Image 1 (cartoon, rainbow, N blue to C red):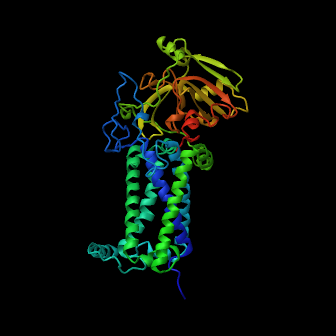
Image 2 (image 1 turned 60 degrees about the horizontal axis):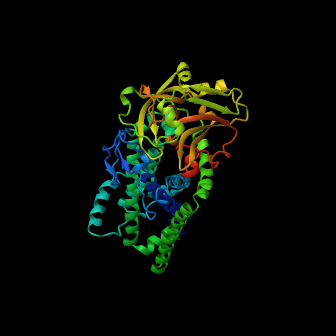
Image 3 (image 1 turned 90 degrees about the vertical axis):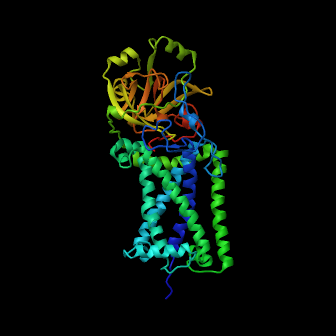
Length: 488
């Protein structure tokens, strides 16, 4: 009886893994390009990064002009990042789309592995593997690559075990630690890794580990009995050199074709990618994060000394006049599908019950900062306005305009009712300053920063957001193809 050493499901899972791991690495590099600096502290203070991939100098002084974190972005070429050229929205869509299939493929692989005898070839069953591995290492050093194994030698078995059962889960765990929804719901979880910035650094190092493994793995396949290795990977048994070369060429062509197509369609038709991939991502995001409510409460000693900003302050005459009068004439207009439209001045807001919270801000670019916020609960606004039954979303309109388009963001009603969703008029015990959103900004602590509208002009209760802007739920979604849901 001939035993199929490499069953079809194993070979198929290996191929699928190859496709999506390359997409994950390239899209991950695109995400890194938005904030090409890595830190071992959550404050991400300029100048304290342990490594950076940009020569740009960020000047955090607000004395002459506002420097925003978008100026720290680096444009990576398309041959290394997906899709390249400052397309963070596209990079995120491909990353989260790929992770769904990569994890799904991994789960199926685990199940089939442990319901067959294949696990015995990956998991060491004796401590003797370590001295054996040292011996095999000396043979590798003398360029002897065809070592005895069943089918893997001790070095290969330890390596595959580490990749499958250690590095893979480690990447998922560190990725989850960067999610604002997970970090807000379980504040202690990111601290397991030392905070979100440390998790981000570790995630990057894990990616480097995968890249090195892929390079070494391919080199070893080619150096140690190439024909047998390629036959096992594709056919389940050894084959001739000519067929092995053809299989290798086919693998390379398929991976290249998938990546070229993904890059091209992202650059030529980003809206298509946003809509199609976003629909799948949003489905799983709602399942996983819909009920995530922030439970953060940092101490005052943990407040970040320098809190970055993103987005240039409004330049309209209307806003400038309000600023000159220190917002004395400013009023928050609350309208839409509600029974009681209201207008509130800053004086009115200060008379109402103030909520305070010390929370961590997670920017979509990758930086984090901890701040103390004081303001009015959105739940109170909802209770006073009494939304109509058809009101499903709340749209926050800003005084800010970018390239002629007014900034806005929409959030679901349920998100607005969270205890730590507030309209903040204070930051770190002082009145909110202009760079950070004066006179009023939104705080939604389970979301990424771009959803937290600054320089708020009005609030509108709507049944849908399709008629606002370009109809994708926010300015960044309209123009930069970001995700509608910002919990990851």
